[in-house]
Image (cartoon, rainbow, N blue to C red; front, side, top):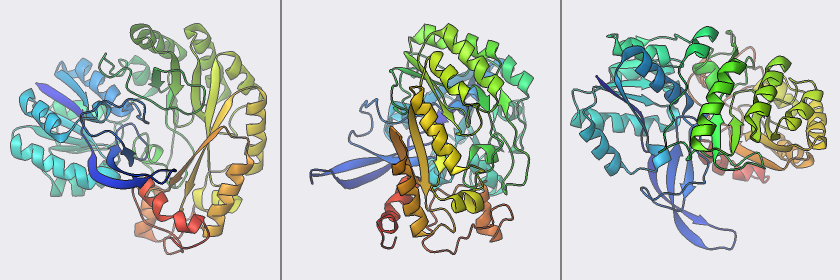
Length: 452
């Protein structure tokens, strides 16, 4: 049995771009899918099949872990193909798949890429009618439609190590949530890496990164219920309306030290980025990871919240080699935070935390999203003013993407959600869009004081 874990190409034509000097050029529109909490498209100067390492590219965590898990638990011949990392053209990808003799093809998808992916699945089925296609990822929240309308053998909801193994052992159709326990996580094989891919994954923020970089998880899940957040609602939990249980599962210090020692020793990474949903949930976990990183001896960074650690831990992080953190703020309006996002974050406390992080010598990258349901244009501008008032080294501004399986997507069918009292789809200037880059372009007028 031969199984392909595939993150296929995602190219979407050309777009004319004008740079800061007024020069226009044609950019290639290419997407980032597996590994991104919010799949989206970006603009690239280089065409498909031309190497251009350096743009943002996340490691496809769920796919990487599922590939090695399936190899261990089924004995199947496993092939890992990240076409996004390879910047592969459709011609090159299809030639590879047609020559592979695969019995199963696993594809992770979400609504931003789904129209594209379903067309690609139809093409694969036409050329390889005997290959059984397994669909995973947030799009599996719509599993009944996926199965009914496409040549798909199985649809696995949630993180998919155990689900894919069940399919390879003979099951088909809808495979519902079957998450790893903490014990299973810490007994699982390390995620897939090889020399082809180990140095391709890049996230240049927060400032201070030394390349090449190892992107890793030290935990899975997040207990907070932000309206737009995809993975805690669709992958590490089943909570489409924000009323369910969301849990956090931590990898042990022993697992992380062995994993980091192996990949950094084998591939010579010069820094480590912890891309957890929220790295600093629980002081004890942070302390354990600081101890691990002291022994690993590489600079590192992490995605954090502003309000879940003792202030002294920022210094401990610094002393163990941490050079910077990402902090999710989402909005600069406390009303939006409280009544729409449901983030449960005090923005003034967050401001004080940023000052402390900077005081101990870490860089800070802030993330903000615009175009939430019920958010006014003035509240968007308030967010920008708040962001500009913080001592951030860098910041990310993106349009709020509406992706299946999240409370934001559920709002579209229910009209209202109790935990998100201020969220309204009919409020001006709300724009329904699954691609955050496209939405940000459509919101430009509102952010400047006009109309979207």
